Image (cartoon, rainbow, N blue to C red; front, side):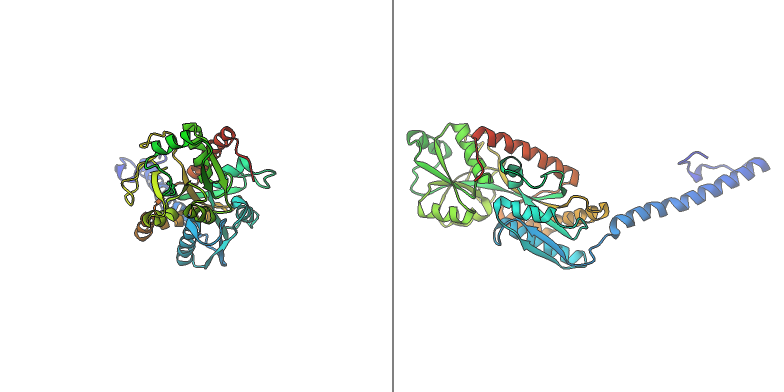
Length: 347
């Protein structure tokens, strides 16, 4: 019988020889049918049988507080509840995420250490001198977890209520508008440099060691404008400390429905996000990759997590490991073009 023939299509034999052959074929078919689901079941079982045998580490390449730390702790809590072992967050901030990422990829590739990478991972591929690891080859992507739009905000003393008014003011006052960032190569600097390039404005970049100090100086009026993550900027906008002119995402936020996108405000091609994804060291077992990916997708599909993400201005993103790998490659190339065009230098 040909492979894949259906037993219900057999007809009663007309002679003994055909009866014997039919019985043998039918017996073989039954044997094959009995074995097939076992084989498939074994494969499925192998894909799910991996589980950590000791406590897991989830490395966050940022200090405590902020969006990355929040995401890391939520994922770690989910892993603790579903994988049978505690998952502990380890904050390894510094050097534009390089310290934490290097700690991650130098860990044993056994599935017990995972971590977040973020948008600086893409800029570091171009900016970092003597990079000690390969930003593609030395990681095993699992999935993009979430992305956060940036808000373009100005100090209330700036006489601009729209992006076009801001650009006009910058043209009339070259070099007088200073924009802060979390550091060279960070997403908020990339956004500011893009605004300079696209509007041919003379804006002065002021790098800080983290978003907190930059936000403090913006509140105090030491700098006049900034692109910053929606999540951490929203409370200060709502408190009247800043004026929000635009959002860098591809759609308005339901939390600030009157704030246009950059495209709506007249600046095309300035779609920038802070993004965060889960990775493991390269070389972990395939079973571990599949299990960790599956559990992360379950986490992102939880109703309570989606609600919390929405409240924080975080967009959940579900990808396969292959899709996330392609996304990282594209971001590295996109950031490289911006960095070279804007002549951004490492600190």
